Amino acid sequence: MDRTKGFSPAEGTRMLRDLQSDLSAGVLHVVNADWADVHRIAEELSGKYTAQGGHRLADILHVATALHLASPTFLTFDANQRKLAEAEGMSVPV
Image (cartoon, rainbow, N blue to C red; front, side, top):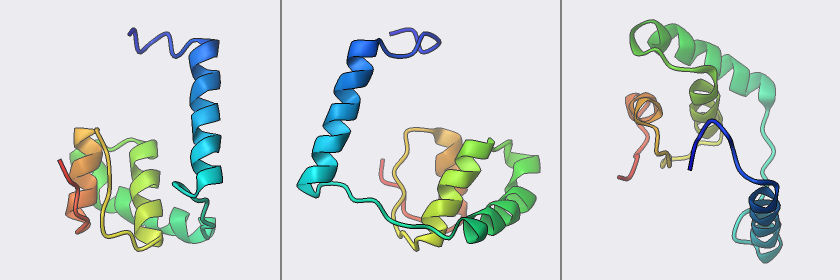
């Protein structure tokens, strides 16, 4: 349960197997993104919110990708990422 140690190899293998199963079953699917556009959106988000919100690169890229894909809903367990997504008008269920 120590976040600094990561997952055991067995747990990592199980999670990757579960992911592949979900992809094969159509529960999840891979979508293409225009990464130049995602980066453009990320730069805009960073300029608007990073100084006052302290958002990390991963948070900004995740929200930028969701915006690029026109996702109306954003799922996260991270409070700071939630603020960023909500500031951009996305619904973030609790």
